[in-house]
Length: 241
Ligand SMILES: [Zn+2]
Image (cartoon, rainbow, N blue to C red; front, side, top):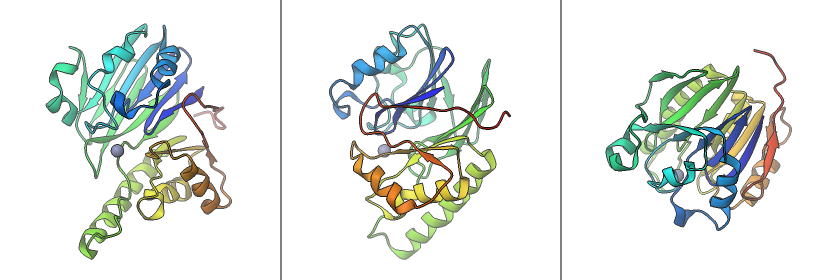
């Protein structure tokens, strides 16, 4: 299986004949050429498209355009997307609220509540556990009052415990340097210790990923240090669940 970087929180995970697509953003948010790379990647494949919340850097109401090259597409979206863009969704869309589980034909999805908007996804497919956080992150904004900062830290610790319970092999989580602690990326790597960590929410500033790697020091987790759209990483599971 492999992971393809697209942009920001948008990635593809290819497992056999299935592609998982995450958080395809609005087109003005996407660098030129990304749409074409994405369409080529998904062409003729079965796709399960996940969208964590309705913010423009995570969901595009024209998602159907990018999915038109697929052989078959399943949509899994957060409830705020269904509220905001009902006309953009296909008839058989799967709408998920926080703390729900959906059992697909060959995959399971459980959602966690995001502390931003919408949900984070915990997906099990082919025995591989994949966490994609959307905008669930340690949002310790520099000028937040102490009580707000405390609430953020407590909420984040709860979220970390839930992610640890899921024990993902692959963790996609925000590494946004506008806030402290790479918005929780350091915690996810050090506490959860996934096989692979994929830094997200970098707005194309992939130097933030280098900063994360040099701050991190020694770790058993492999960091996907992509530099642009279409970069790929192969994953070979080390354990056989
Ligand atoms: Zn975002």
